[in-house]
Length: 110
Image (cartoon, rainbow, N blue to C red; front, side, top):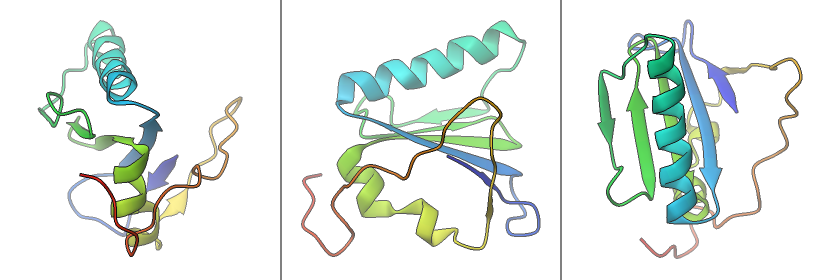
C-alpha cells in the first residue's frame, strides 16, 4: 500500500507499507527493496529493524518504506493512524486489503 502524505506530513511525501508472512520474508523483502533502489542510485538515509525483522523501516528521505510481519502491521495499524492520507493506485498492481491480522486491542506476540 502507498499512502500519499502530501499535506499530511512535513517530513516525507509517502509511505510504502507492506508485510511478509515470516521474519525471513520480511528481511528478504526489505533487502530486495534496498538492493533494487541502490541499483538506480538511491541509497537509504537510514534502515532500522533489519536484525529483528518484525518491522523494518527504510528511510529514503522523501519516501519511507515500512515492511512488517503480519502481527506488527496489525498492532501498529499505520493505515488507520494515517487515515487522512490518500491511497495511491499503482498501475498494474492490485492493492488488496491488508490480510486479517491481530488488531491493536488484541494481544500480539512481540
